[in-house]
Length: 205
Image 1 (cartoon, one colour):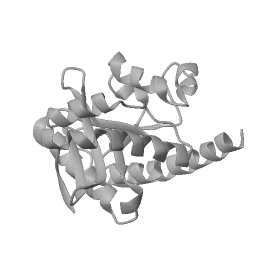
Image 2 (cartoon, one colour):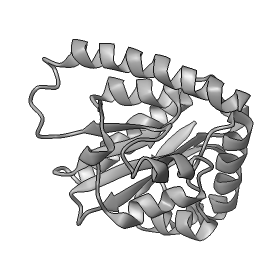
Image 3 (cartoon, one colour):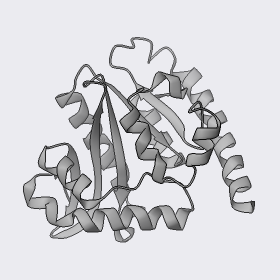
Image 4 (tube, helix red, strand yellow):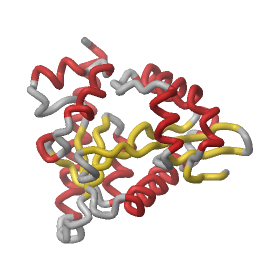
């Protein structure tokens, strides 16, 4: 398996990346901010993406979005092709995109919003902490991307204060990460239970 920084030679995978992301969200019944192949290609060409390939076969992907004049970056669109799931590949891609973000934008806060419990666990292991949406970027272009999500009505009803997604943040200047590790673990477990309850209610409605 080759996990590398994507470049212009990988733009041919843009459509399958978009299709795989959309299909995964459909199967899981979760919300997602849809992206076009053109959007993915732009991230690939500017060196802000990680791709996993098994020979010439697409296996996984994740990309960086830059917000607030490089004060914030988001690691988005993490996806593994169904043929390569349950092999630990998502965790490897997540670590690679995190390392790329730290290398290219060392002073930026790295954040993400997700409904996926597995992604929350990976974020926690990398040093992220659960935060309110008010601690994330206020760049309107980022939140505009949520308009294609099936849960956008929740975000608007709460005036962008909360949604089914959980906000998580890695602050390179936060020296308390180690000391707060146990507290964050308890917070993560509580959020996990809340999310599981919300998903069950969403499916029943």
